[in-house]
Length: 117
Figure 1: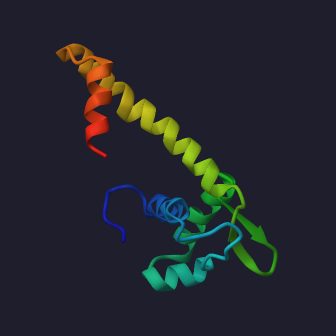
Figure 2: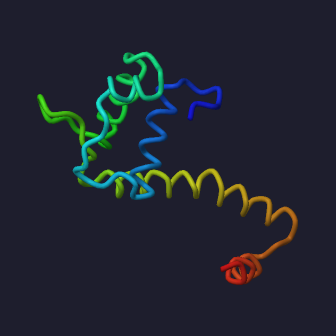
């Protein structure tokens, strides 16, 4: 699971976010505890806890005292909104800039995308 050079706690957070976005984790569904997560992936529990804390801070997870961590009811919608903004900023805008440089018009892009469905 942990493969790139980013810190493991960020990879944990991103993995859980991806599970929420894909529907593998549903709203109000309980997630593994930090200790279970650490044991399963053979990582330091403090590292897992740091990833989970970030998710709580971002509103993706919430704590039920004495019970555990759960997916926030609006987590999927929040994550989709963030990813959509990032998509337009990091993918669409640079693509449009390059299209302008090479003389590709918006209509041509729309036609191309329509043919790729």
